[in-house]
Image (cartoon, rainbow, N blue to C red; front, side, top):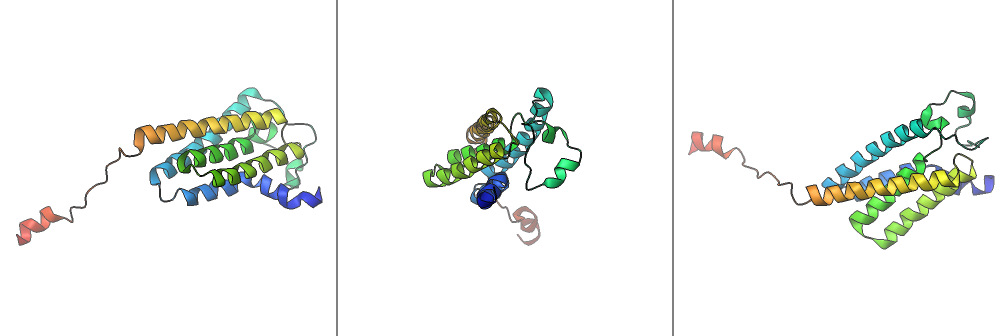
Length: 176
């Protein structure tokens, strides 16, 4: 497993890397950026709730090489249960959302590569089954689609910018 350390590392931190890259890429499109952040928060909460409802365990004997202390410490519901994969939800939310907003094929392929690395890493280290990462990815992509549709249909182009009045009403009374 040591020879794939860099690939595994990128897969393990895929959600965080794609999150920060997405923040950077969407910085100039404030509406999409804000909706993305809200979608990520909603995605995390939804993952926690679904895991608590389904209670499907992770595969036996997970190999947690990046956090070995977890094996000896108590885990919370999102750590105990594996369905759906939170890592998969997050990377596919970011991948789908960045595609829908920017429509850049090369960038989407780059995101998709990171997403696949994350899925492979989660299955390879027995944190999740293939079914758990597929379901997680599907939920993340669906949330991204809903968030993008909401932002596009309800917000973009409909938020009016306030004209700067430069306090004219106040100064006109004193100097005018």
